[in-house]
Image (cartoon, rainbow, N blue to C red; front, side, top):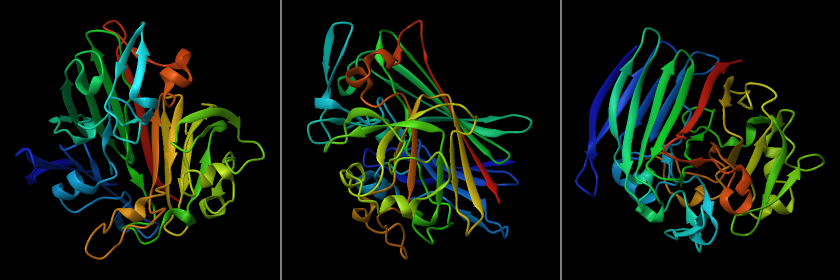
Length: 347
């Protein structure tokens, strides 16, 4: 096991960008301090060939100018907040509107656009990084002086993300990671040949602005992934909820937690599998329905629609408006805690 560090350019704010590489016998991971971006996860296919299974970009300039949050840590809020406002303890807070009339992923200067502090952490059977930052009271309109730590821990074939946040007054924190997975390896194919399985009986329908409107059963719908389902069969369905987000998924699913691995993804061609374990009540799954607008991933490969799939484990979407009784409120006595683990295997 080893951790190496190298310079990876300078941001537009003249901040030094560093890339950290974590390596063990099974896999290799790259993380940059800008946005806490999980830039590369290299895992073996069934023939033992190590290849990258997440979408990425070649330079810090690309991440600053055209990244759709590839691999980024998302905060203070994951997803959209309707009309860029929320109410908490009788007070209404006005947020930045950076997605039409709504706040998306915490606003303009959000966590995915900041340079994080990084410390190395090591144990007998794991290596990792602890990323941290402070967000002042009313940054992007959110209340509370907030301190956030996110640990990336590599242990065997598992990558764990452990989030911890504190605030000096009640506030709403809802964090996630926005990695786009593609198990084909080095972007050989899009995700339409991969198989998805979810421990979910219900999903949340959305409107034209991708805001939650109704909890619905997955039974007898295209959103039933309780059995392993070929994504190609789903992505080209004529279901109105699929069409409304440009032919794909951009929906919250309510996790049952009837089994530990609440999400499974499999690429039968490469033999790679990904399983997700989380303590969160929901996951927003996004199938890269607008990725064709990004341009090139590198000199050889143009980014295409459905090139990657995101598993944004989190609290319920737009919870303070849509499901206020289920919103996690962070207070001085009740810190924000989230754990999500990605497990990579070969079949």
